[in-house]
Image (cartoon, rainbow, N blue to C red):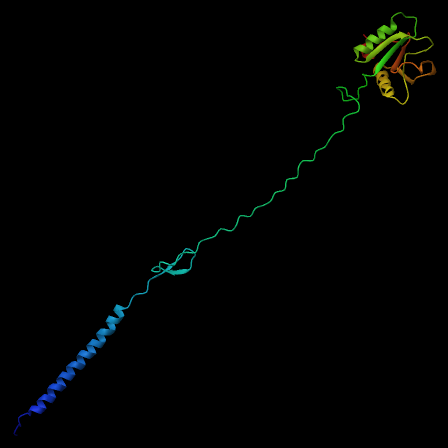
Length: 203
């Protein structure tokens, strides 16, 4: 079998096929290598971060800030204070004694003797003064009274004073009779022989 020598044209064609094959292989390798590089060259997205209010955010974004937390406005409770009620006490029309009872001892007291006992009116007046009563006159009574009695003018403050004095000294109390109706104002005490003074002063 005679082998014909290869023609130059055929040799060139084989060389071109070889070059094409090498180029194809290089292209495939390049393509495969390029996919890896493109994936490697891609920028990895920044990790998501959680903002202060719990919403996701991007750590690489400098403009992303946590929303400011606004405190709710303080509730102002209006307290209305009712001013204490002021009670104005009416001044007492009558002075009171330490025991809390009305005192009438500033009323003028006139003491008259209707007995034959000398100085009886003076003694009675001294007893009344010692008890705090306002004795303004001591004299004799011309008339007849059978028991020591305290007299007052009806419808005046003398009545309350006469009753208080009579209670303190255990005496009878009556309105003025005609014989002394026009006498000077004030409580009149006419003492007779049985007068014994203030009950608690008896010894």
